[in-house]
Image 1 (cartoon, helix red, strand yellow):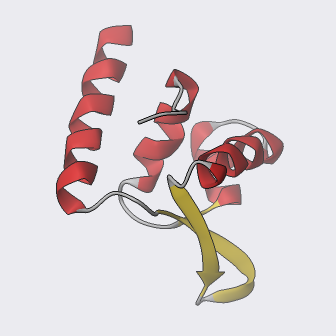
Image 2 (cartoon, one colour; image 1 turned 135 degrees about the vertical axis):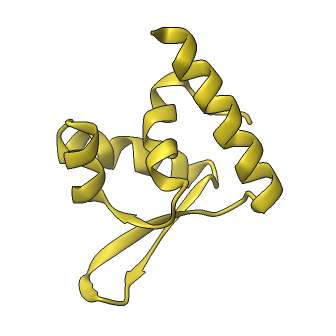
Length: 88
């Protein structure tokens, strides 16, 4: 997983359940929208996420995982959970 950094983990965990708006990610992570936007741009450039139109709101974009299939996504979830548990 080239290009991934530890600071990407919290955002990726929020995306494991499906697409989210950047504003919702910022609220959930308790960071600024600008901080989320910077991480999303980096992850999108690396092919890890993509922004798609939100069917419920044409002005908004949903952020989804792009490269991982179900098996790799589940593996990533387990890995991120272990890493975050070790920080406590």
